[in-house]
Length: 283
Image (cartoon, rainbow, N blue to C red; front, top):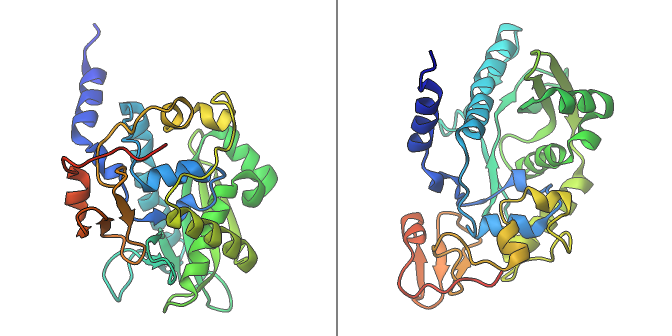
């Protein structure tokens, strides 16, 4: 006899999730290696409220659960892993000195992975079998350039802190058979500089960068959350201060956004709410 259990689980996941949590205050380091800067600009300006089906939410949830498993496996193997910054009691967070609105958090820091006792960042990922096989064949730089850029970003931003990282442990699990892949990724200053300069251009721009392709049929555009707006000219699907023409980012403090019309620094709650003066930003 069939029971509505799966539907009930899916409905509960949708109810539990607040889609607004997808709106990040900052421009994430995970964005800096993405090839389409226009999509990253849309994300930063909260132009599209992203709704996900329950299956995708379960994939996200599994990724978070695997992080705890990875840390436990490393600790059981005798490695010293710091999941939180002892100075703050929170995740290790790193921000760009020039544009502090660019930043993010790392999964952890290893203290004793290398002989020279350098701080080694920890990047934990899950992958389906086909991507995992490609990674084993090509390594991170070629198979997962966005992940590579993300790690370079964290290493670059960490250099001026008390926790300078000169390498990252890239640890991946194959979701199909639990095989593991590990790679030590060294710091490449040139790659970091190129990516951080590009990220600064994105957050400083009042206009969206050029499209990555002229047609929405391009493979990267086909699955992009911003496709209807970018290629079809549709308005943002959520009215908020960031998607409003009257606003600008506060590049020095990710907690705030500036309303030019009201001459006011807006908190996150105010940004989400918007006001009656809303005018959709050009797409």
